[in-house]
Image 1 (spheres, rainbow, N blue to C red):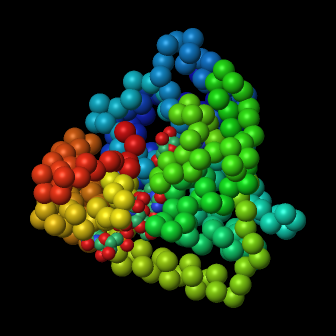
Image 2 (image 1 turned 45 degrees about the vertical axis):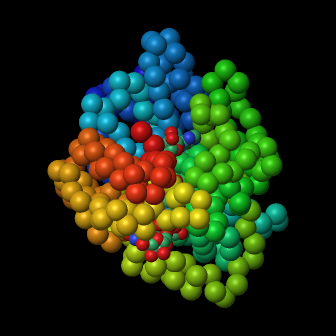
Length: 286
Ligand code: FAD
Ligand code: EPU
């Protein structure tokens, strides 16, 4: 591989969980050309690959990944606000927080819901990141992506179905850029953002390493409440712990292994199945 390449790179350096064994190679693709080259090289060598954003929804195994982790760089990192139409154009590698800030600074409304959500625009689109009421898919005007074998494509908003923490893009489709619809802001943008951030600090264990919510909420339910109901709040396995503050966060107290987190996830799934007859689906990606 050419360009910025790290061999045997611990994925614990690239995940908010601070967990994960080595990737055979960690490659930064700074341009479309280098992205295409990396994927071609993987195909020729028979290596698996996946694109990582900012690793805020990833649990990488302790054994690591015997393939290539691709991170998008320079050409995919710009973010600009336009007035007519009211849009923000953001590269997939932009931090979601940067897009929220730019929209706010330009007096645009629409991105406040995402305040405090870590991750990149690419990861946010793949996950349709959001809150209970709003998600990024609701703001999308278009998405530009690259798919090996199919090339570049521009999707309009209605070409993609946006689900709860999911979207209909094929799994090997790489998001490169998107247009997000905003509207002229009002005097309350700042207050809405501060309010959302204060709620988050109060209800989520932000001082520990985590991946955010581990499981998706079942329809009309809250996983935090279900886990409390089975008495697992606070349970530890090694340095992983079901948070005392929010039971759907399994936090890394320091040196947790992926296997510790998985062990707690299995405890939760078993107990919730027995008590409530509900199968919890992970939100975190493996
Ligand atoms: P990663 O974790 O790196 O990857 C996630 C998935 O996206 C992987 O499948 C990856 O292959 C794919 N992906 C990444 N980039 C691309 C790309 N360019 N093209 C195609 N696929 C790509 N989530 C919420 O929805 N709401 C919240 O309120 C929220 N709060 C959180 C709070 C904390 C403290 C933490 C740690 C996480 C939280 N999350 C939340 C989860 C996480 O922030 C989101 O899922 C985020 O969108 C993931 O983005 P990422 O760039 O880190 O993606
Ligand atoms: N609750 C408990 N016990 C707990 C935690 C929560 O009983 O330990 C109860 C709360 O009292 C509340 C309800 O569960 O009545 C819902 O809790 P909260 O408001 O914290 O929201 P959530 O449903 O747990 C969802 C998203 C979060 C997002 C918040 C705010 C999912 C899986 N999680 O959490 O997203 O930040 O709403 O909108 O949808 C993420 O996806 O990673 C994430 C953090």
